[in-house]
Figure 1 (spheres, one colour):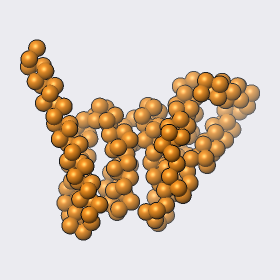
Figure 2 (figure 1 turned 90 degrees about the vertical axis):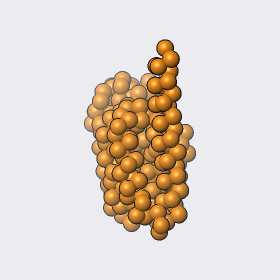
Figure 3 (figure 1 turned 60 degrees about the horizontal axis):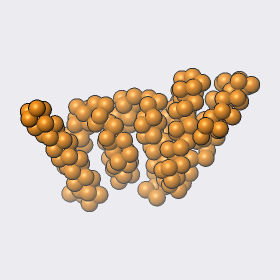
Length: 196
């Protein structure tokens, strides 16, 4: 990764930053977003590269990439999504890994999650689970109250849908498990503090 970063930084020094930002964003997005699922590790490594360039060259690298990524997200969301099409899954994974590398804060991710709750089809349920699986721990660490509120909103929405769809029921079971794990960790922390 070090050699790749050095070569890209050299390109930034000899070319227009705006051109470099646009070309880098287009190349990365074209290589990661397809109709089939892109391996998680490949997405993670590309987002690590963006995060390193964001830190070394300037925040405009991450900002430009994030802007193009969100435009792509909106474009794909507005199209009809076949559950077999994995473009949106890839975009969500890219966004999640950018969040893990601290290119942006948690509020954008909650906006995306809340957008999924509004539509709440099978595809959105799949994407919510994907985000929670990928960055749920970081979301809980950054703002446990926001995660708790999101899960409560999700459960309220899912109560009406669970009779119609077994996938919603499965998601509720996973969320209940997450909630129990969070509760156990808080109880253990309180017991630890009480014993000392």
